[in-house]
Image: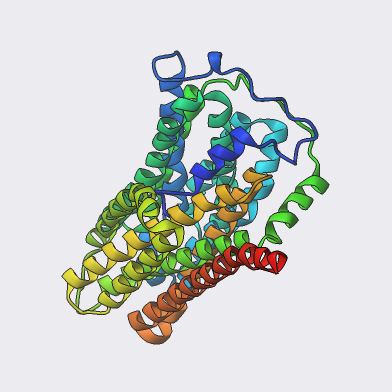
Length: 440
């Protein structure tokens, strides 16, 4: 999840406006008078706790991404094999988001976040000592599954405990933690690996996560407005089936997955390209490349204005064009061109992701929490697929192979958006045709 945005904003609406089908009975949202807001006791503690949780989550989730060349060298593995240390974590998270969201309805948001973070951090302390690539991948998969409890619970906790007018600021701090955790984790591992090796780098991320987990445990306020419900798998399955049968939601899920395929492929493989000729960059510098993520924070924030001017599909077309231009520019053998290409890819991806993820909540009229969870599942499955397929393409055809994969995914987004544009035009014509038929 690239860290700057996880689609979390859609879950805010879901948790606050839609009762969950996984609970037999969910109490109405309580009066807002005693809920958290800036200036009231507990708000600052809550914000700091969730910021720390966001840092830990994304520092752990993508901890090996900047280290893949070193991991490959250590185990004698190909880029495709080493990429599974990232894909296993994101894939497991994708598969577990929905069931974790259901469990949080029964056992509580705070309890689920605490348990998830504790398990992920504990596993993180064993990761640096993995004796083989297989063990490393297995530990990373467990870590990803555990981390699924954070995005599945944090948004619901905020919606229940924070006053509506303060919700945007609260979620902004959590997403900022995601962004800073993902970016700083990659930069930290790059420089430490250059000096002491990749195992020491993963150990440093584990220790950072321990500190964040301790801060979270002692700072997060007790949930005051959570009402537990009984699990209802049949109702959950019905809601999920309804979302998957909706053509527009299916298109949005596919767009999120394809955009993330591009992003996962590029940032999984870019380290391999930059440590080789003609660049020959050291590991620390390669890790610092992830500062480009800051561009995504800006483009995500600008997505709302783009939609206001161009409409949702217009904004998607612009995101597709920007991403494709960045992919083509990155083919050059000049470092400045590659960096500019990464800037364009990052800006296009985050803008497209922001438009698609926000559209999910707008489209789903019932079960919005589950609709958003399905988007996150598709999103992280795209990350997993992109990381592995991008590395395989790089092994087969170099950077041009990875770019080709990215362009195919971008073409898929463009095709889906074009189909949606035509479908919308047909829908708009139907009332006119029906009216003409009645008049005749």
